[in-house]
Amino acid sequence: MMRWIAAAIVSGAPVLAAAETVAPADVTYDDYGSVEQSLTGTAGDAASGAAIVGNKKAGNCVACHQIGALSDVPFQGEIGPMLDGAGDRWTEAELRGIVANSKMTFEGSMMPSYYKTSGYIRPGDGFTGKAGSEPLPPLLDAQQIEDIVAFLVTLKE
Image (cartoon, rainbow, N blue to C red; front, side, top):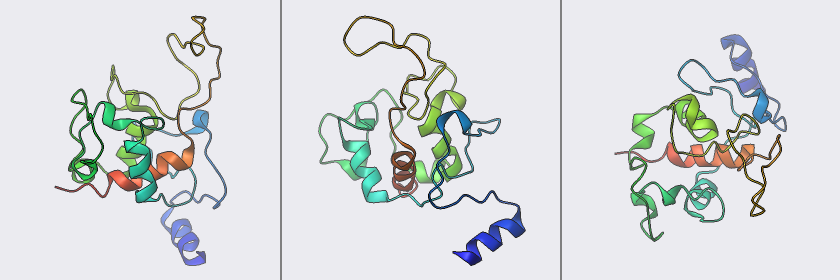
């Protein structure tokens, strides 16, 4: 760990304490929507990420995307691009940015912003029919984003 921190300091890379989490409002996106810095300082777990991606009550990415590695998950969507090969098409930083807030990379995207708490056009308050008030909680927490990114980078052609 100390070698990693020393290497990061020498290279000028941001150093994040293991338990430090970047709040949604503090995420730094580059001009193309990439997020270089880990949101947690902890490596994501690809198996947990796959579970979130395929879970209809969590990420539910399969509602819009087809993913060959999750062929056992039924009713995969066709609205978004197929995610097979995502690890070849995008870098880890690009994937982190897309999952956290896809609109920073793809303006007008239908994909939800999973790590965002404000700036919504018309948030609803559950099933009440009333407008929600900001800040809203993010759809996924920082570690879930890192886990999804860890899974997506494994998807090679």
